[in-house]
Length: 343
Image 1 (cartoon, rainbow, N blue to C red):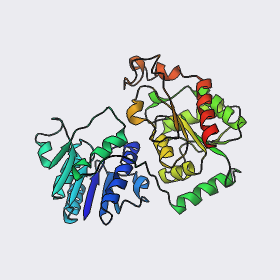
Image 2 (cartoon, rainbow, N blue to C red):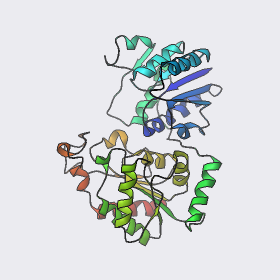
Image 3 (cartoon, rainbow, N blue to C red):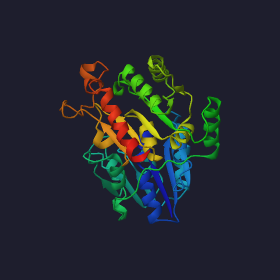
Image 4 (cartoon, rainbow, N blue to C red):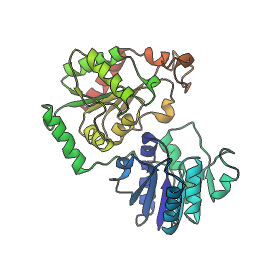
């Protein structure tokens, strides 16, 4: 049996479907599973034992490349095809695959006319639960019930070794007590106050952690992370903008703690089993919170009933009052709780 899974979304979204991939593999242990995901995210699934093949999709690659991909999918003779979102491209890929069983998220009239008819089964998207559970529900038409699986993120020996070498170059030995602080997101309105993050870095140093500062490669993210580093009294090891996704996964795997905002690395930390303290504001923590028991989510839902507004800051300001209201002592208490339990 061959199964096609398409998810053309962001890094965290791709991670959210790993419990579903595990459930598929458990149900069909001899099946080959092919995943089509956005180019640049291959390290999220390339080392996952449930996945046989990862096909990167480059948006805007041109009609010739798109047609070549559709022909490749058709030639693979898939038995089952699943589009994990309501997107048009994934619907076309699943239909073009020729799979007899084609499952898709119910588009509810969105996208091109008749899109829902490309599938044999449609699954409603119920946004009152975690995204990982929503992804699990996509395979219910196969008779597979959600439950039990966790996020998975596997690393390569090459990336593991590269990270150890980078740490050694900064004087941090194997087995050291590491905390990763990731203060940025691709959407900066999800970020906390720079000085507050710096104060938490100083606290982590005082608690005996080697603090590693990370960010995405975008210049705005890297600049913000470096501004945070400049405010800290005890300077962190600054890896902001320097790590590939695979290297970041390897770093998170050997870390004792992750502290940051709603971001892809937060999900990556949860996936490798690292305790997480995460700050949430305008995004929905019930849907996008860290999918792990080893987490503390700080969100001012009692003081701000507008949460989750899903807006880019209050009044278009690119700053979220509900995030600004979180205090350093609240964060320290959450970290101390995790230290007491897991460290």
